[in-house]
Amino acid sequence: MKPHECSRRKPGGVAGKFDSELDWIFDRAVNRLPSAQERTILRSLYDRNLKRFAAQPDSARDFLTIGEAPLEHAQNPEKLAALATVTRAVLNLHEIITRN
Picture (cartoon, rainbow, N blue to C red):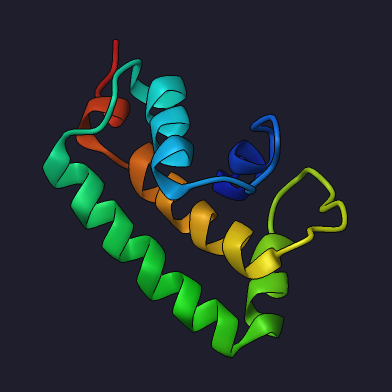
């Protein structure tokens, strides 16, 4: 499963506040909430990518077409793509990769 597919499966889509989205991603991936430092770093990643995807909406739509699950009409593809970059970062944490 690709990162944007995980973020699309959350009830309610990408609507809502970033902190609750991040809490949901962390809970599903590592069964804990993010630390304050992780939250700050990932918020910065989200903000940078949201700005980038907002400036290039076609880039967001292209990014979201990668993966096995078909992309349903996203109400805000820029936010979904930015959230998917955060999900990808979480899925690449050392504690996920080395999980037993």
